[in-house]
Amino acid sequence: ELYYVRTTPVASPVKIERPSGRSFLTSSPLAFSGDDRWIAFATSPASTGGRTTDLYVFDTNGTSEAVSVGSSNNLLPNLTVWSDDGSALYFMAAPNTTGVTAIYRAVPGGFDAPQRVSPLYPASSTSTRIAVSPDQSKILVVGTHNNQAGVFYVDPSDTTTERRLTTGGGGLIRHGVA
Image 1 (cartoon, rainbow, N blue to C red):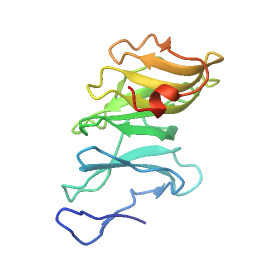
Image 2: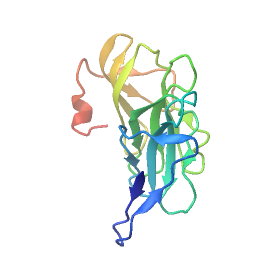
Image 3: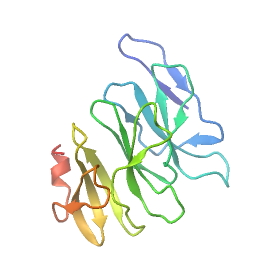
């Protein structure tokens, strides 16, 4: 079960209903928008044969059910972050069956139609962290792409290229520079 509690003003716990046919992915972190309005969470099929891991968002200001985020099939749950101001949700997923992943941006009111904001990454690539600059003009990705480990810069307005900034570790993101 999943609950949230407002702390300003202090309120009683509110249960977030499980989406129909889905189970909460308990091993996955939740992503809270910077304005504390939105909660993003991963789900898995409630039974075998269902769709793979998907992303849902819940509006804590409303009374409606959580909504499914488009293109979030085969979600990589640990790679889900909100922009600082809560205006956009960024996530990595492989929405088709080829295993090719990409970073997507979804906005409130348009969760069903996110934009791809990164190059396509082959199934052999791995990513361990993404960070978005406060103005959302830069994305940093820590991982191994094309057999090269490092921190990579992605310009969301150019989904065809990325630039490797470092080799190896993720020190730039660890210190909060994005």
